[in-house]
Structures are given as structure tokens and as C-alpha cells.
Image (cartoon, rainbow, N blue to C red):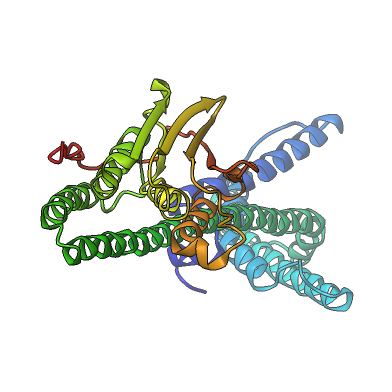
Length: 400
């Protein structure tokens, strides 16, 4: 059998070496003390004088110390031959093995008591010969008590081991849940970053295409002004390139920067209105969530209007929800049913909303018969989302 310290680790009991021996002393002390008191009470009830000789004391100490000493052996047997997880036939064999072990241990203790008793009698009374039948009587008398004590220790060990294993499994399950949630969060963060990085070059390429068109039409001043405004916009995006969520007020700054580029393109044909409830400014939203909606309103809504083009952005709060509407007074083409018209922008937006909010977000598309289009986002307003990052630069007004 391994050393006691290593043995405690092997059998799975969360005890130090000192705690183990204290528990063994207490366990066997209860039985030895109960047996001693029962014998003395029996003597008193039978009318015999109650006395404690040196031999009695030595025998009691020997029985107690030997019982404590066999505790590791009993626990090793309990661990080597567990009572659970067996068929009926094998369970009976395991019980018989334990009965054989306890009979051997009981015989060894009785043999030790016989030897010690002879020695103590010689020391106290000058005679040292007990009949060998005395050891047999002790063996028979103590066998039932030893059976109860042994099986109680074996069953108690199995119960403690089951409880300890159950707690260990609970902790492992909890840790697995924590790891699972962390992995889910990391995956969601990676997917959001991927979608955002996919969107950045999308509107960048569209804007560069517009700049090239201005250069071809010999509108160099507008092209230069658009490059400067685009630089301000890119600087703002890069300032929080690692943030998936930003306050709505900062998202509106990005949107204004993008619309500043479009105002250069449309000149006096485009009017932009903002109706923003002041209390929604700190609501976190996915970064660049409005830009595709505004770009969609321009490309598929007002692009063909020669005058009076209007884009209106409104934001309000209803209970714990943030409602953002992007309205345009364009011709009202149904971009959702036209796959080619939907393009990367709206597809990306739908994917980001699903990734960020699941079923908690809503995306509405309204086109009344008389024209115009309103795209609405309804998302939770959770202030606990991380929106920490560098500050944005202010919107460029160089073209004014």
C-alpha cells in the first residue's frame, strides 16, 4: 500500500495527513468508548465491583491503537473493492472479500491483545499464562462489533467519495460552462470584427469610385474636398477599430461624416435632418451600423432626384429599446426583394444585428405606395456593453 499522504490523494479524500489521523482517532474512540462503558455498566448491573486494572487499561489502549492503525488498510480495501457499480453476483463477491478482510484484521487484533494481556498480567500479578481459548473467545465476541465498525467505515468512505466526486463534477461542469460562454463570446467578437472589417472597404471603395467620377468630370475641387472629408472619416473609424459597440452619439458623428461626403456630391440637392432624443446618446450600437442604411437610401432612393432630396434620421427610446429610423423621400424601390439591389451593405447589417442581438433585434422596411422608404432598427439599449476606446475626431466642415 502507498504512503499515507499519497494514499489520501489516491483514494480521493480531501484531507490532510493530520486531519486523517484525527478523524480516525475520533471514529474509533467513539466505538471503543461506547464498548468500554457498556462493559462497565454490565458489571455494575450484575453486582460486580466496577474497577479498572492496569491490564484492563493496557488492553483498552491496545485495542484502540490497533483499530486506529488499521484505518488505512480498511480504506484501501474500500477503494480497491468498491461497493457500487457491480452486478448482483459481483456485489456478493465484493461483500465476501470485505468479510474475509475484517475477519483477518479482527484475528490480528485479538492475537495482539492475547500477547499484550499475558505481558500485562505478568507485570501486574506475576502470572503470564492465559489459555489460548481466551483469544478465540475475544475473536468471537468482537466479530459482530468489528463487522459493524468495518462496514460503517467502508460505507462512509463510499458516501464521502461519492459526495466529493459529485462536487468535483459540478465544478468541472461549471468550469466547462464558463469556458463555453467565453468561447461563445470570443467567437461572437471575432465574427463581429470580421463583419465590420468587411464593411469598411465596402463604403471606402464606393466613395473612391465617386471621387474618380468627379475627377473624370473635371471637378477637381470637389474631388479634393471629398478626399479630405474621407480622410476625416477614416481617422474616426480607425480611432475605434477594435470596438464592436460605440455610443449612439459617436455613431451619429460617423454618419454625419459620411453624409458630408455625399453633400459634396449632391451639393444643394440633398437635405439631411436629425431628430435625436437626447437621452439615447449613450445607448451602445454596433459601429458603422447606420452607414449602410444611409448609403442604401442614397443609392436606391434619392440618387435620381434632381432637387429636394431628403434624408431624415430619427432616434428615440421606448422602454429598454432603441428605435432608429432612416427615411428618404426617393422613388421607393423595394431593395429587399431585389437581391442585386440589397448588396453587401444591408446583408452585412442583417448579419451583424443577428450576431450581436440574436432575436432581440428587429429590422423593418416600409415603403408606402406614394414613394419614400423608411428603414427602422429596433435594438436593446444595454449600457453594460463595452464602448471604451479613443475619442472620435469631430466632423469636418471644411466644405462649408
